[in-house]
Amino acid sequence: MKTLYLIGFMGSGKSTVGQLLHHDTGASYLDTDQMVVEKYGEIAAIFQREGELQFRHYETDVLKQVPEKDYIVSTGGGIVERKENMAFLKDRGFVIYLDTSFAEITQRLGNDTSRPLWGKAEPDKKELYQRRRERYLEVADMTIATDGKTPQEITAEILHRLD
Image (cartoon, rainbow, N blue to C red; front, side, top):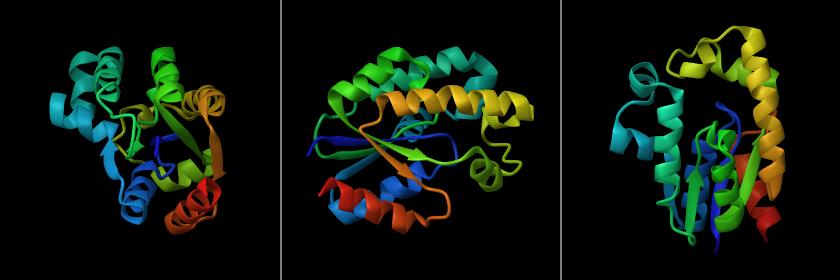
């Protein structure tokens, strides 16, 4: 099996669905954000200390360490901020976009302060969401609408569509 990459905006359920896919398929599981934390430290601290640009460099570094086969990978919401990451995802795996509306994201995240880019003003968050959504759609091999669905329903839909 080609490595499956889950992409989508923060709060779209990539980590939860990735864990469920791992459990249901037996494929190994990786989370690029967790890989960054293990190698470079907490993401919020990286943003504060070194800035978003350096975080994106670290993110690309760990992405390139992912094997081509038999993995389920949850990516950070900003993985599509670099064109080289988009090309890597397309080249090396099968990309599944968890398409979640901005309204649903806002409801799920509320005032989550652990996510550096979620603390911005509402218009800035919407602009970030729209820009990334275009990139997610550009790179996705499969798009799954997630609004109103449980992680288990999303996982079942992915598995059904992969068959």
